[in-house]
Image 1 (cartoon, rainbow, N blue to C red):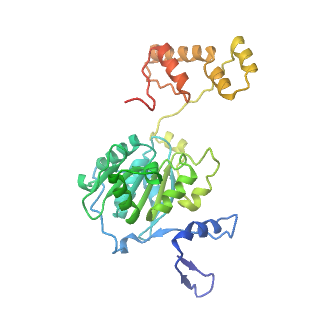
Image 2: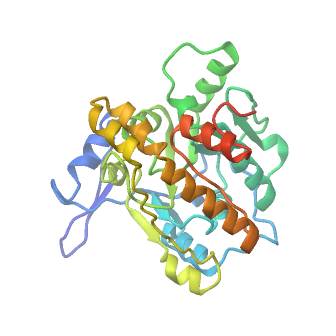
Image 3: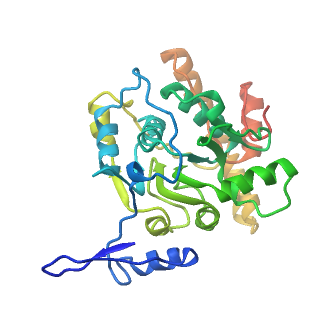
Length: 335
């Protein structure tokens, strides 16, 4: 760590921090504590200890202006700065992540939320970069691959790294390699949805020189978004979705809220129930809401020919709607 003193000769003081105390030091430097702005930078061009990864962006991979701007906030003076880049859904977060890995050219650990996302990220690395197949691997419950070179990319889930229970022999070997290796880049997808305690565990287990978090929003249900500032780094860039819509980079979104009063029978039963789960089933399965959903589906299918996704965060409602509407459904158990 280097601290430039506010003196006329601009002295630079360097000292080493106990790895187990890095999080505490970062937390003490936050605005609500000592208020010392901190930057975590990686001088990757002068890193001769960790082997280089032969990987470039393909010629057809042309980042858009806002993607280039986000990367310019991360890279400067030949160094990579840790932090978070916020881009709307569909704006190309994957290309930004792959581009960052290609610039650093060191081993990269890419963390996703689930196995499907792991496959998608592995595909994106192969789509946008010249990385060789033997230099990229997936680590999930179904795929336990290893890259064969001195440096490479591992794509896995937060759960696979943070899991504290008993592992298979193959999994234990891979996780030991992940723990022991110095990663040039720790690339973290969807940082707004991963619990703060899991971030802490992942970051404490792995050793990385640069951390890049990607997300579509800096809003968290646990209201602990400030934890990301010292666990990962500050917000480096946030794109204005209205500007991206005007530029034709993402679709114009129209949102409408439809209020559906409960039927008398459902509402009377709702008032009787004290169990919150039973109340949830009653308002989720409100017949008036089902009729509104059915009408909207028919309108968009018959009048507009639109593609439609109906989302439900209640599995019972999902299966009932799919059965009544005679539509296919996808959920966790779908294969």
